[in-house]
Length: 159
Length: 159
Image (cartoon, rainbow over all chains, first blue to last red; front, side, top):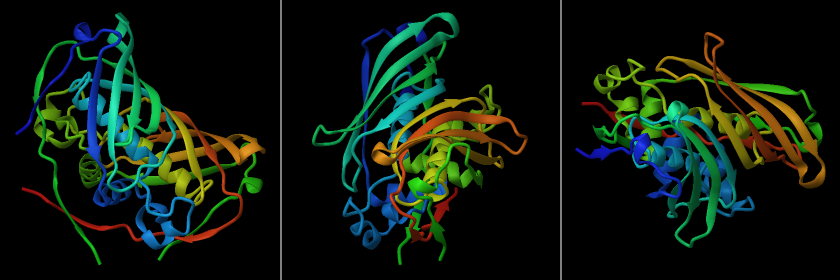
């Protein structure tokens, strides 16, 4: 059981930073495809991907969006955050085996509605920028400790 | 085997529309959680979710982002599209059983780099707006027919 402590609105200050990392395996790309229905072969079919400019399967760009959202939901501000908006610019594709680190920095806060904006940067293990953007959230009113759910046990049948 | 025909840059005109729909099941939320690591119990734990303002599990907001990305990748412009940016505002949570329809409208095009912007709207089965935004892409140079990959065969072990 993993517990997770959030940051309340009052605890967040401009400049404050937090990170969240995930090494992207082929299975994460398959899971994202099955969640969204995006079975574009550039993500799933190594033979097809070899014929593209990328040369090998790449992750869906929005999987990086999902990692940013996970960083906001689990790390800063953490559980209780309401996600208002996300702006995202994709810069470099993510390949299987890449470790993507999401770097969040509190940009602005406004007491009305506990509104907080955060700069979001995703970098890979070579410090190459994968994506950049800005998120707007409503931060939690109070500090809270939440027990995270277990990651679902999933098996993927390969041919 | 599903084949998919894209729209080339030349075929896209401002005002042109396309849609992509998906009914969100609990398994899609589990798959998105396992892809991104976002195991916030508001998505996965019905007991915890009942204690929140939502009353029941809701989908990750960025799953809707993934549906928009699927619509761009599979429908319009379709295979060969390069995703440059996405702006997204979340308006209403998606609940299990909701059918989310992504409505894409070509907004602008610029011959330099085959740049195209599209308005994106996600609505549920009650015509309630789930999310709105704008995407920027590089459209494919030529019409192309692509065989989509099979959706991976996945089983989720429930307790």
